[in-house]
Structure formats: C-alpha cells, structure tokens
Image 1 (tube, rainbow, N blue to C red):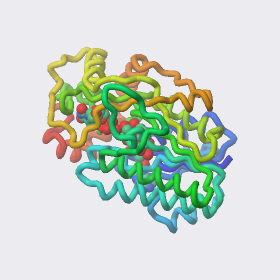
Image 2: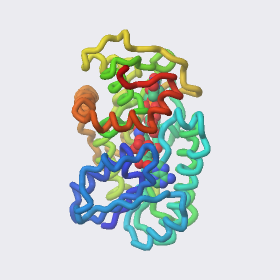
Image 3: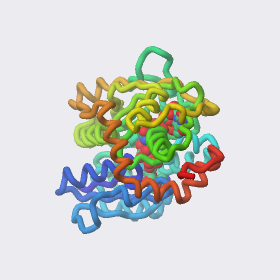
Length: 339
Ligand code: NAD
Ligand code: TDX
C-alpha cells in the first residue's frame, strides 16, 4: 500500500507515522508536512534510511505542489495537517480557514483526480459543540462548532462529505476526543501543566476549572485510525473516545500530585472565550463495527506521559526556548522557563 500522511510531523500525525512504519514494514509511507511552529522532525523515530518511509516538506494549500505529489499514485491519504490550537484560532482565525478548509479542499481535489482508494479526514469531537451534564456525542449529533478552530474543522468535514456525495470519493471521517501522550506540543493543557510544574511556574487554569474533556491516549487514536483506514465502511463517520471524562482541575491536580508539587502553583485565570463546557464521546459504532478496544487507562497513561516529559527534557526545552516563547509570553505575560 502507498500511504500519504499529511501533518505527520505534528503531535498525533507523528505518533501515527511511527506506529504505521513499524507495524507495516511492507507499506510505502510518505509524510507530508509544512513544518509550521507545531511540526517537528524530532518527533519521528525512524530515519530516512528506513526504506518504507520518506518525508516531504510542503503545504497542503499549495494546489500545484499537491497535484505533482499525487502523481505518485497513493492508495490511501490520511489528513492530519491542520492548525489545531483553539486559543490561537481565537486571536487569528484566518490561517485556520486557509489550512483547515482550503487545504482540505486541495487534498480532496487531488484525491479525486488521482482516484485514491480511501481518503481519511482526521476530525475532532469539537465539531459537535458542547454538552451539558448529560449525554454523549454520537455520529448523528448535529454539528454546532463554537470556536473558529472547530468551525474550520466542521467546514472541512462538510467538504469531505460533499466530495463523497457529489463525486463518489471513498472517504471516512474520524472524530476524536482530546488526545494526550508523547510529543504533545507544550501549548496544550497536559504538556503545559507538566512543564510549568517542573519549572515551578504558575499553572494557568481557565475559568472555574470545571470544564470536562474526554481524554484518549494518542496510541489508542492511532489504532482507531488504522482500523478505519483498512476496514471503515466507505462514506461513514466514526467517533473515537475512551470514556475518560475528567474536569481540567482534576487533570491538573493529578499531574501536581504525581510530580509531588504543591497545589499552590495553580492559578485561576480568565476563561477562554466561547469555552465549551463538556465533551464526551460515544464510541459504540467503532467498537461494534470495527472491534476497536483502547489499551490505556487514563491514570497509567497520564503517569507514563509525565515520565516521558521527565525523560525527554531536551525535546521540550528546545521548543519553549524558541518561537513558542513569544506565543506564551503574549498569552500570559511571563516566561515559563526557570527564573
Ligand atoms: P499539531 O498542531 O500538533 O500538528 C499539526 C501538523 O500539521 C504540524 O506538523 C504542522 O506542521 C502541520 N501543518 C499545519 N499546516 C499545514 C499545512 N498548511 N500544510 C501541511 N502541513 C501543515 O496537531 P495535532 O494535535 O497532532 O492534531 C492533528 C489532527 O488531529 C488535526 O487535524 C486536529 O484537528 C485533529 N485532532 C486533534 C486532537 C487533539 O487532541 N490534539 C483531537 C482530535 C482531533
Ligand atoms: O492553559 C490552559 N489552561 C486551561 O485551563 C490551556 C492551554 C487549556 N485549558 C483548558 C481549556 C480546555 O477546557 O484545558 C482544556 C483543554 O485545552 P486544550 O489542551 O487547549 O485542548 P482543547 O481546547 O480541548 O482542544 C484539543 O482537543 C480537541 C485539541 O487542541 C484540538 O486540536 C482537538 O480538536
């Protein structure tokens, strides 16, 4: 199989490439990534000498480039490439529209023209909006995105659906809850809290800390996409989630507790605009139709993740001392490095 993975130098994409290169040595895997602030070739464990893997730098919004790349005749495309951070979408929505919507359209056009056998769009539970205390997102839940990020992901999902309905493009869409695990970029809740705690810096918790996210280990997300790309029914959407609902404050306290750091580091800050209150996924369809079983329980997975950050200091120290430093300072008005 000739597989194209886009966004394979980001958090989930790189975990997926690492997983697929090892699991399917007979596949030819191309990783296309623009290497934005979030892309990092150090996330990739294999070297270019691995005969079944190679990296291409490029932008999914560049239609001429994408067209020429697709002359390689990929069998399957998995699109992870996106702007992914909600807070950045609130301050600068434009690039989210370009990459997440226009980039998806460019990929869909190429997938159609070169007749790929399967196009998988990696989407998010955030397209469903927010839940109250009860209930779960199913694949039938109406789309009701609340942030520029989730609106751009919903727009992309609708285009993917339309290319299936209009042109018969063989597609799947996956909608996953919050991922955590190795190589998670420090702007996101779990790595930010681990790194700030290690540096004895304040842990900024938005609002009352009672917002709920449904956490899934990134490796369990990878195994779900593996199943969907091989066995997903054409045209179908699959929700991915492991029934791990936690309030943000529970997650933050668990990290502090594991690192033996004081809760006095917690600092409640202004709430995120349009902050979704609760996400919770019903993954029954993926479990029943494709036999997906997640491997990780959250407590073990979180401890392993904290250990990974302890053991891979140079990975995140390089990031927080670079361009990211300016972003963090603009958000919180202070540095996250040891003073
Ligand atoms: P990330 O921000 O860590 O990585 C995104 C990657 O895409 C980076 O390597 C970046 O360089 C690349 N990229 C950005 N713009 C590009 C462009 N124009 N052309 C080519 N490459 C480009 O994101 P992530 O957390 O790994 O998320 C991956 C995908 O999964 C996204 O589509 C996201 O919406 C979705 N998702 C994420 C989560 C989560 O919890 N992180 C949950 C559900 C769904
Ligand atoms: O400093 C913080 N303090 C805080 O309280 C940050 C960065 C976040 N939060 C809160 C906001 C959310 O309720 O923690 C929760 C998780 O925040 P993020 O890590 O920014 O994730 P979220 O907004 O839930 O979105 C993530 O999951 C769905 C990914 O970033 C998306 O790409 C994915 O689609």
